[in-house]
Length: 265
Image 1 (tube, rainbow, N blue to C red):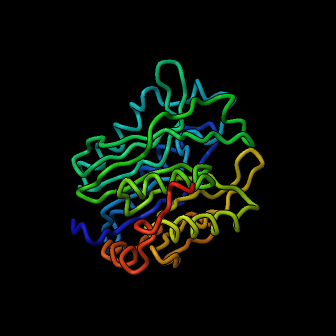
Image 2 (cartoon, rainbow, N blue to C red):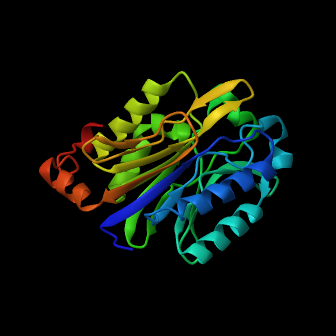
């Protein structure tokens, strides 16, 4: 992998609420489609809670116990196809508690990082059923410094800035972001890219779940805040190339990190 250029694919899929078997099958199918195209991705990103959807009333029963099933599927796939996967987020049960957790797998199938959502979304009663995470989603993937966040996290600019100050050049975001807040989605993601001079890779789901519509519009935004690819509202595999040299160029052109005055804020 050329660490100055990354081919990134996102699986914008429908998620069947409370039906892990169907969801695992769909993700497996889409993963195979993603590596079968003309351009093979270096990294594949999945959406939020793809194993169960927001079946919170039964989440303790449905959650992947210690992520075993997810790790088996994704690890085997990474080894077979020599691809990195940021396995979106899953409902992950550990020690009797359920978290909304992302796992990162390298080309050998090894888990190299994990992150559990630290900002729980009260409008969907997450705080009643899930336990918040306790560490940042900062990691390196073949020498590329990156960060990861989940959905509601993007409303907290302090978190993105913390990751950027830690060296992240790319921020991977998994989401189940519903209608009608498309303008919030697009604006917040663009702002995070501009103010931190980093690539934003954001994968959202589509479909209808328990009466809630999800609009997709997965997108990749460059460090200038330009949207370089944006999906529609249908299932799709969204792919684009990241030129990481651009991150350094933008940060040199407008040196916001050097010009910060943190003593005032």
